[in-house]
Length: 294
Image (cartoon, rainbow, N blue to C red):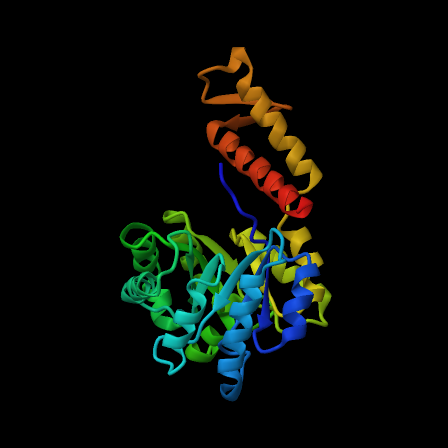
């Protein structure tokens, strides 16, 4: 089972050389070098060149590197794609993906720019149309143009576009979050939760991380390095979960349980589906350990 942890996904402005360097020492699983929202128009060209050079130079260890380009309609989009498609990033993050055709265009543009086949597409899910088309977007990214690896929830933009309120409970967002989770899971696409804006409110942040775990998210996007530690902890299986998972796997591997669909472990009935879940728990724990060792 090949799994890449995406617990903590930190946005970093591409125009700030200092933070691009600092990123090499941070414990985030993934880094998004941003050329879009975090960069002023008069700094776009500089940021594009700076990010491409930084990624080419490397030094980020096992961290997954994604570059967020400007939107399809932006005057900066074409230059962004040309500059970063062959820079050596793991993924290109496309903002405001709203239809299956957006995914098809993204894939075609990467091919035209000479991007390697291993370069993934990540899609920002942040518009009302994206919520309505989530399943079709995931299908296009999985079947038609199989580069789509991750949905990134853009909850701030989604709130702006829908006029929904960003509440502590996120009740106005839950249906959309769950819709995207279901679409992602149907086509084996990871999904990362939106940002928590008040980075000084650690208790609120942890609560929202826990909600994301309960919903089925793979991780969370972050706006401050101080959020990395609590986020990694929330989205990591704890020692008890790992021990239980190993016990379930070992029990199903016993000769006397061969071919059985359900067995008893510690007085509790477990089925083959629990064994599958246990294997994923171990796989993500091993993947986290591997990343931390790099």
